[in-house]
Image (cartoon, rainbow, N blue to C red; front, side, top):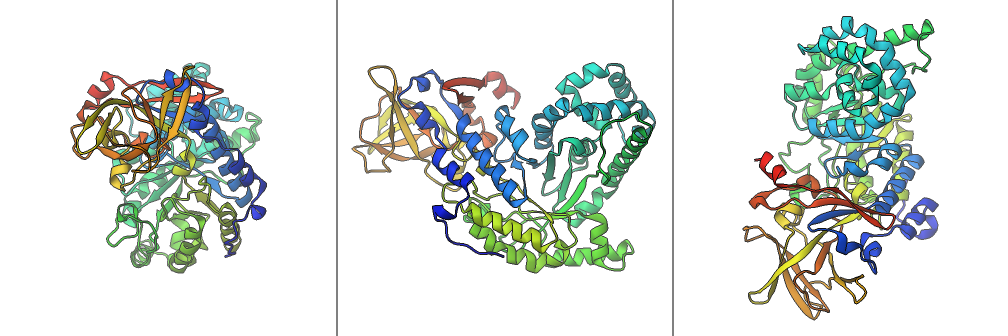
Length: 536
């Protein structure tokens, strides 16, 4: 692997320099304007320009390295602002049924709806579905679904809500041959009911054990058999001049992978480290080799490599968390040392998430070189990265308000935002989030004052949330000017791993969701009592 520790600006590609020079933060947009005072609190506020800068950087990493970059929905699911993610990244990685459906609805469906080839293929296949799909589904409503779709086809294709139903009959893994947006699913374990909901929409399914793979082997083989049969029909339609769309030479299929544990990770604290002793995440080398040998014998293969190549397309490791590319450089020798003989038989390897690509001091040049060297070593193998935090990194803040100030061996400001409910990682890691205070000047515009650490400022406060949890404490802060009830407090970088982990403990309100773009604030979602009631 090529090594470089030189991060001087002279060695950076132009696109990385442009990113560092031009990315702006939400507080820069709010400063000296009245925007902040039209935002109800609490609210997560996305800065569209910041998000677009991140996506452009990730797009350039993908272009220069040849990797596919998928947004990890477990970290960043702000789907109401997915326009550039949908078009510039290569898909999404999902942790179960709900995220799979979100990826399908927010990334795949809008693109399919706009694609003439997808619509032509659906129209060509529908007349055949009554005789084909019934062999692959347990749904009693199958015939009615097909009849309804066929009788109202033009209306069906215009309505995004119908594409979930369509892909229960024509799997997305087939239609994806035109839009090329992966939906890659991994879970530590799947239930049968979950797998039935995932199969119509996934392009890749990654298993955490060979036992799980064997359990669901018949389901996947049945789905891939359906995809193959539909593809053969399309070839016949093409031959007969009924279909104009160009078809790939290789038959589409749902790709199958295994998550591996290379017994090496530099992540701290242990709660985030997937390679600690007795970790449930990933197959350790000894179990990997043992189980492959047993299964190869069981299914009458002469060697484990033939068995592996016949049933699996790739491997997946996820051993990073908020780390630089130098951590990947130190990790890859462990991955190759334990699993290199099988990587040579893979179509792809997923390097997982935790790569802090959009952080200002991240070495993108090293990442690109590591990926290019890895691909060259393994005959152009496809590499995938699945950042979540790097997509949402420094793209927006959680804005709250000072509700009261009380005294107890110092001043305690009670806010309408909660560490427990709205920023749980602050208690899990734990860490103290940076913040800034927003007050009005004489013209009604925002004056922004960043916090000065715990005690460097003249006025010191402890920030606490509105719940009854005694430990719902955000941290200690200080400023050069005093806080007042009604002042706004914005906690920096709160768009990732926050919204996806929110709770309504104590009935605390969920923060609204909004976006600042083109000098204006737009409210995207406001939660109500009904949201609280319906989840209890």
